[in-house]
Length: 90
Image 1 (cartoon, rainbow, N blue to C red):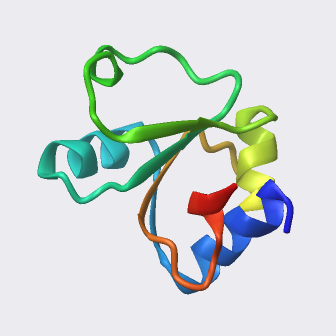
Image 2 (image 1 turned 45 degrees about the vertical axis):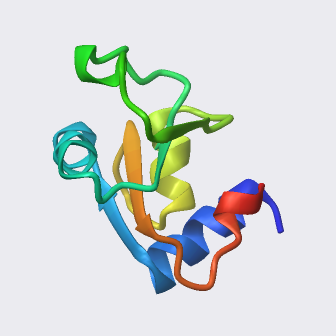
């Protein structure tokens, strides 16, 4: 399963938050297990010293949005639960 399909399956079957503000809150609450970050995502100050694993998505925010099935750009995706996806093993 490729990265885009794994992300889409996590969105469809798991628990996922979209956007930097939601991801920051999930990191601070320690509920985020993985952050997926687009290539054109800015380096937010809160991302500097976090213990959550960060995965670089090989595409822009528009590509990440499309992989999630959304018609808009997504800079960061916080995975709380992968559902039936194998996103953690990629």
